[in-house]
Image (cartoon, rainbow, N blue to C red; front, side, top):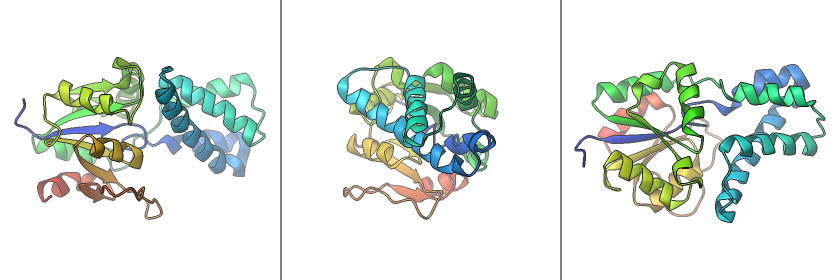
Length: 226
């Protein structure tokens, strides 16, 4: 097992901003864009949870497209197929958060081992990281597609630990998604919750993140003092 600190970074919602579709949506539907984007993201995650429970795995992009179709129905936005395909294309080039690069650079400068860890396929994640200019900061990409299920299935976190060669108590999950943090905590891992908004509430289940930060460039110091 490695004696270095291993950091597993969630991708969608942690490194990459899923609300990066807002500009495209605003060009299509104006003031309705924020509500549409929010529902799209919520349903995307919900569908992955449901697929995982049903043991009916599909690529994460299918969950994304199904959620897009749901949002169109629920919010009465009858988008044409070419528009929907264009929105799905935007999802392949979502931007990184403004603090992502500084956080990753600090982690690598501190000698930490970094993995991208995602519900997305390895190919989709590779494309996102390349487009954002941050692929070079990662020692590898770990996708749930290897197990054909989704976070927060415990097997996914064990896959991460096995791939990284680290024990649960020595591996860190870095995520902006509370469900992901809880999944890792349930598996005995250390966690850093990236709480970029003061309005976000952590699920009141009992377990708390090991550290809480409001931007990624504070990650290394938080880990070193935890």
